[in-house]
Length: 197
Image (cartoon, rainbow, N blue to C red; front, side):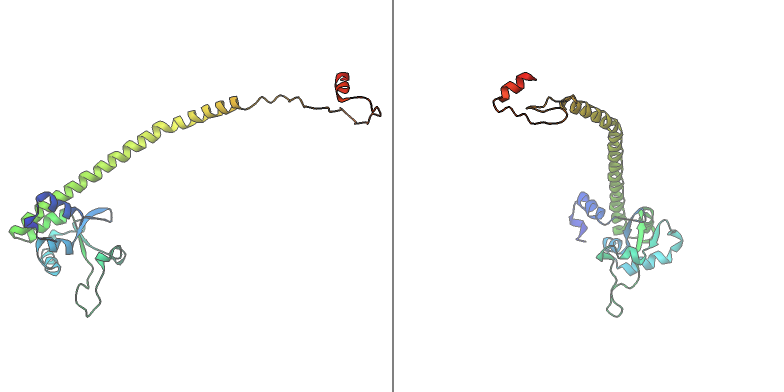
């Protein structure tokens, strides 16, 4: 991460918000991101955490599984013998991040921790806003779902008014009822036949 001293507090919070992930239905930050923010190598951060392991129960910190690591390339592992990380990253919940400030005793750790807590609060507010919006949309759907039935009834009534009546149409032209027989009267016109009917 860029030097946070030259950035405004709002911008720092926004940068941190991007590093908060939702894993196992919890908002977490990865040890590598935290180490970068604190200005220490990730393995040193993890060493400090392991020395004070009692302060980090399972709901404060957990190690990612292979499936969770494969979510993005950011979690990729390096090959053995090539340097880099060969252990699964740790994910710290909001409480775990708060506990890190007691493990890492430095002025920078305190400042970074305050910014991280602000970012977690901001993410929580955003998620609450989305939840409220989802509830409002569901309420509107319930409210207007009854109207769908009413609208269908109106459309059916309009269609029935537009349909012609089912009475038999009068057929145009001469149509003999029953058996058709030929008349041998060559002088009879069509008008005369029609008048005879």
